[in-house]
Each structure stands twice: as structure tokens, then as C-alpha cells.
Image (cartoon, rainbow, N blue to C red; front, side, top):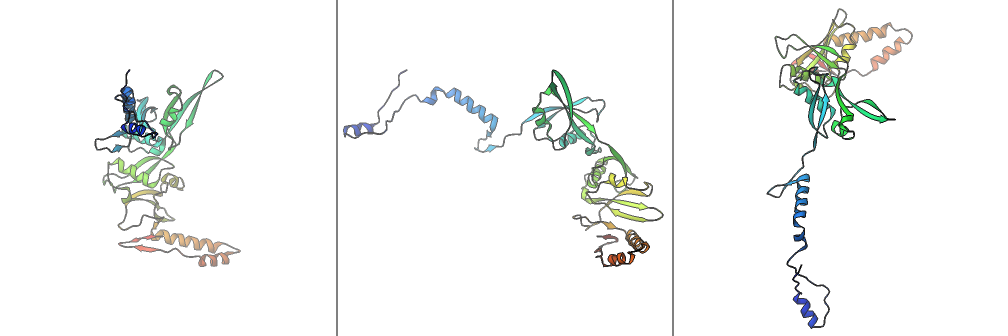
Length: 316
């Protein structure tokens, strides 16, 4: 292959004047890049397609998160369906998978805290295959775990935790409805149970507009207590002496009620009952009864404030 080489005129003038030239400029009609132009262009285009896309305006867009398919066995949710193949991201957690399955199967009234994922993996030792079941946390990512094992050696299954029935009187949502019995787990909070009740009626109202009250109607005591959003109704129900004397009632929050902090609205009857019970307990004690009574009298009392427009509630 012949190449046309042209000597820089500046070098020619320097050589005639007796000076040395430090550089030599070679102008070739065929560049090095032209020899490998097809290969470079194909590599460049493939790199661009894998990493980022550039628009006509010159701005680059963020690459999409890679996805993969995960086979989840869902006999726990639907006995008639053995498994469900889902397209998930590598950042999708087990809790997200459970929520997606409940939405696909139209089970928004089911408590997501009742379900969890397990991963069955096969390990080969001394020629025999040993299968181990791992209980996954809610924050674990199935796609990342599946990438560590061959697909044939891993299996994801939805399983169910132990729970209990909680009866909530919800006539505030529908006048014709008396109560709803929900199967919830011990980790389900008050706000999560309110959301389940709203899902039962396909309501789009906010959870912040409602509260659940624990009501006691017995011969000895009678009180109503508003539960904190982080309280767990099933654990509270397990502490009841008699389920016939206690109940949960869903009510709308009074206007202007503070929601930040651990505020417990109490009925006056319960407040008087708790004070009288404390005084009677101190009065019946012997020995250091006087000292304990004086200690209780010196203790700082709770600062109570009446709510505007709702003087039947007291807030701590």
C-alpha cells in the first residue's frame, strides 16, 4: 500500500537555514482510524446501548435498572395455582414481592405481614444433594440471591405466619356494616389495620383521618382509650381478661387532634377509675404505707388539656 507523505514546509525552510527541526509533520491521505472504522463504530454503538442513551439534544438519560424473572410458588395464596413467574428488579425486596402478589390476586384485604418468602437451595456434599430452606427477611432481594445459585438449585416459596382474628366495629365506614373480622399478625400496627379496613371497602380516604379505640364495658370498670398508630392490636387483644368486655372501634379523628407524639385520649371515667384505684392500693398497704402515700402525692401529676369542641376527651 502506497502512502503519500508530504514534508512540512516549515521543516524545509529550517533545513535550508541550517536549523534542526524537532518534529516532523506527516500528512497522510489515509488515517489509522479509517482502517478500523467498522470495528470501532460497532464497539462504540454497543457500549452506548448497554450503558446510556443519548438524545438528539445531547443530554444523556439514566440507564434502566436490570430485571430478571423469578419463579415464586404461591400455593399458600392460591391453592389452584402452583407458581407465579414474576419480572422483578435486582432491588426488589421480599416485601415488595408479597405486595405485588396480593395485588395480582386481588387480595388487598389480606395482611401482608402474615406472609414471608423462603428460599430452598440445593448443595452437593459427598455426591449427595442436600436441600436447605432459608427464611428470608423482608428486606432481602430475591433476584440477587437467585444470581448466586443456578436456577435449578433454588426455589422461592410464599409461606404464612401465625396470626389471629381481630374484630373491629367499622360502622363509620359503612352504616350497614357492624364489624369486620381481620386475620392479622402480631407485628401489624394500628395504621396498617386501618389501611386493611379501607381496602375492604375500596376507600381512598387517608389513614390519618381515622383512629382505633379500645373500649371496655364491664361491671367493675368502663373506659375508652385511643390506640397509638404504632400499637399492635393483636398483642393488645391477647392481654384482655375477657373478650366480651373489650372491643375495638374505628372512629374518625376529631378535627384539630394532634397526631405527633404518643397522645392518649382518655374518658373521664377511666381517669377517675385509675386515680381511685391508685389511692385504694396505697391506702391498703401496710408498713411503709404512709411513706408511699406521701411519695405518690409528691409525684408530678399529668398535664391534661381539654380538646376544643370535644370536651369529653382528655389528652396526656
